Length: 114
Image 1 (cartoon, rainbow, N blue to C red):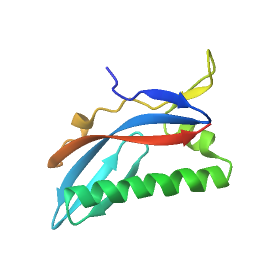
Image 2: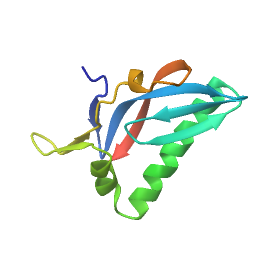
Image 3: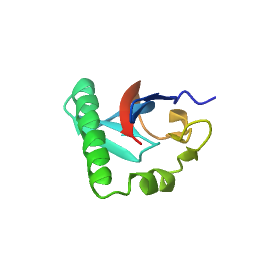
């Protein structure tokens, strides 16, 4: 049962993505399997904020290169064309990240252009 959900707002989709924060040595890493993207910080909150920045950079870069759709499809996202064009992220349970000390799970909302 995926918790990721897209909502269309203008030319943007607001999507909720699962992010796991793991402790590695003296820092924390926020990782999102649906984007295969991570960021780190000195605290849980800092790693989440750095992750939000990393997502923004990813989206801006892919949009500038005009290959965001291609990148999302390569990451396992599904393109839906009816009734409206949108993307659905793959459901990858955070619980599958075995061997990691997950200290926090968080749902992050990000806007993705269409």
